[in-house]
Image (tube, rainbow, N blue to C red; front, top):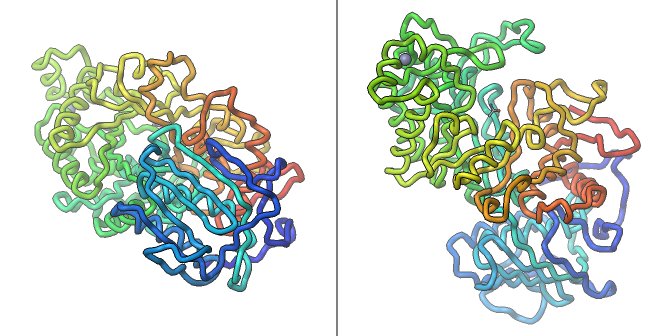
Length: 548
Ligand code: ACM
Ligand code: ZN
């Protein structure tokens, strides 16, 4: 139960009225497609006697109902009863609506009932997220359970713009325990995001248990120490952590219950020191490589050897277990920042290049990606890679994640490959969000204030025809400079709200009103506060202190 008492700085409204935007409508983020207020005098009273009537024949409907009940428990301290039939008024009636798109919903609040329409349970879940923001935030923060809450009458019809609305968390530079990852999933759910890209392997630590290769976690998850400052000193403190397969199953289920698909990332062929130190034969230099999980940030020069069949066997074995753990259609294989210098001097890699008439080392990376793509395809999965996988040529089936600006995504769409837009100049949530270093945490660099994140146009430079290859958008949080959950949330919020809005609402520049968005972001931040989520406070004009 969330029971947070307000500090003076945030005790702004004391009555249980809905947080109103200036036009009198509740403030909702991401912005719904259509929104009409009812008569300002008519209200629906949500109370402990409100019944849930679900006429949706969807096996996941129970997850959506569970979300409505989590809201009820927060406010009333109890769940709502379910009923198979409508008896009189005071119901939340969930109905199938075939005319709606997959994750879309309608939400109508009348004086008698709350009516939710959807084609699938996901739509009902998103209607519940909207309802959460219509319920006055004070209802969630009161120390005593309430008996009733008054809601305005209204009608919302809401359809997401993009099918892929993601967030990536780096769990390798710093490790996040199961509880913290679940809280991240809660945050994503509230923003109607539906993909959690889980970055699990790195130079600085391998974080996923693989039964066939136990040393990956026994050795590869540990590093002797961690650099301090910007690769200046060393802290002398051993660091480690990993997810058992049981942990992973628990998180996958937790995410599924919130309509979030996990996209696991296993880095191939670079960013692999965690694996190389556990199994040195994976590297071009073998035992002589003297591999160690890295204590520094940056791109290590070591790389997995693409000349050996045993490396491919390893990748396929690992991905085989990953496929069994994660039910989603996409597997991310990294592919970014793979330094190919060791390949240049490795006889086995050079032999592979010659044998396959590859042009150069970029061609060899392309060969690796293509073999992995075929393996995933045989197992019914699709490959995502960072935009570097375009360099030596890439299969038409690969999806490109554009991070070095939007160029990779634009190039992919122009050649008919699907792309996910996560350009560092708008979507890197680990970058600085203010230029005032007295009011900001350390960061790797960059500058993405809230307004810049919101200004991102994923369709820039693309024709109407090419735009259909953009699957969606994603915010990325690399964690070199993010050691605690408080700091992680400070970096995520409120900028995740901007990414969520670009993903869900129409991202066309002419549809955006930055100041109106900032107003809604501030309203949403009241909920962050009550739910105990830290967030950056730079958008308050009156200099409210940040905390981390
Ligand atoms: C990346 O930021 N190296 C994908
Ligand atoms: Zn090699």
